[in-house]
Amino acid sequence: MSAPVLKIDELVTEFTIRGQKVPAVRGVSLEVKKGKTLVVLGESGSGKSVMLRSIMRVLPRGAHLSGSITYNGDNVLDKSEAEMRRLRGNWISMVFQDSLSAMDPLFRVGEQVGENIREHRRFPKTTIRDQVIRLFGEVGIPSPAARTRSYPHEMSGGMRQRSVIAMALSNTPDILLADEPTTALDVTIQAQILSLFKQIQREYGMTMILVTHDIGVAVEMADEIAVMYAGKVVEYGDAKQVLGAPAHPYTQGLIAATPQKGKRGRLQVIPGQPPAITAMPGGCAFASRCRYATERCRKEMPPHTQLAGGHMTACYKTEDGQALAQLVRQ
Picture 1: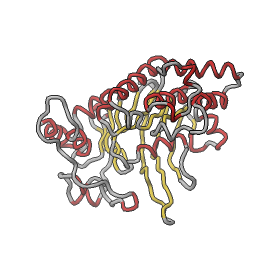
Picture 2: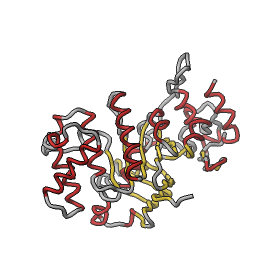
Picture 3: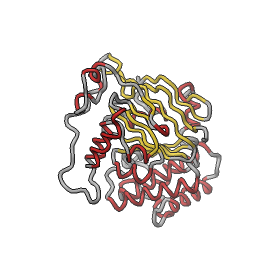
């Protein structure tokens, strides 16, 4: 077993809303091994993107972080802003969710990618330009030399996404964070972007954390899966374990609501809505939507329970996990 390159322990990310501290990430603990892909799965609003931004420490002013995020033995939360600037885009890079808003519309795309190289490497301008052209070619942008002179609005959604990926890869980071990298792209471009990520991982040996609400992306990319709900990890384990024998009712609901080849009839839905972060219940946050919930679930937070092979879930119905998984397949 290789040691984790990134370890998150009891991470809490709070925002101040109307004078009250409100947690968007509530005690998340995860490990990511070198060269592996962890997919973080869950609905919008579950805290996935906030968790990634917490790793990078690119949060709105006033956000408060506690716990620890350990990269190569150092706690990221203890670093100064100057130290974080040396870390971001160099050792840990991020592909942000919206490729258009992730880039400045007033600057050419090649300049923006080159700026990240210039920030961390003392290369002459001609070398940086050659590096950007090479990166554009590697991520599959046609006519890379010409496209370095384009503005973001002059590129298609797929090319903008590839440009953002090129920017994240520009200094060959150890860890790549990707926040919904295929959102708003058509299925053909989605497949190309996922294939590109696989190629990047093979060539660079990079560790990846990929956030998505799409189970199809998880099936395609994940070595391990963490399922988040209302700011907490409710299930975690090897991708085959989590997708093949889900132990938490929320994970089962997500799988049951996903179209599957050969599966006919109406898709199941998860009733209700996730709780607002300003009004989290005292017990299990999923209890109001769960058909198995008891009074105990509504009053007490279920602990994390270890199953076979490192599979973990936070549910009082863990002992019935295999039986519940059968219901999903019926």
